[in-house]
Image 1 (cartoon, rainbow, N blue to C red):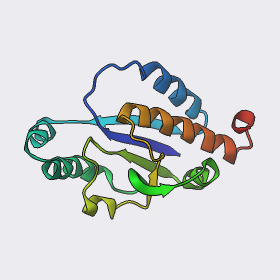
Image 2: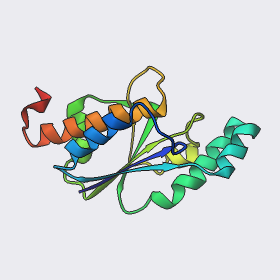
Image 3: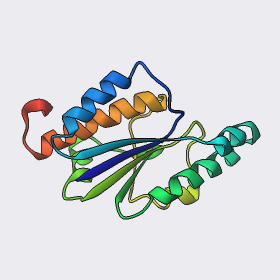
Length: 152
């Protein structure tokens, strides 16, 4: 299985990097995982214009990646699911892509391209923390599917 985590983010070091690296290593026992951070001058410019312009810029960056996979969009208004339901997002799939939006979220048109729209909870968190939570849930999901004791 191939998993991609795509996020609107500047490529910069973070205190969360070692944890992301460790979780990715744990996941690699079950699937190939790739972390793709997207950001360009159009996003920078859009941030100075409006939230709508920003969402449009995010959609343009994400558009080439919404192909030949099961696409999961993380969104505050998405469905709240538990770890068992989350594991079903991974079960039997060849490729899964997770999309973490920028500061202004997603355009409605982009949301329609998702096979599943989920929420990590009702609290607001930075995309870097959302990525850590997502990685942990991916590992937990694979643990559930393989009856690994990690989940207990």
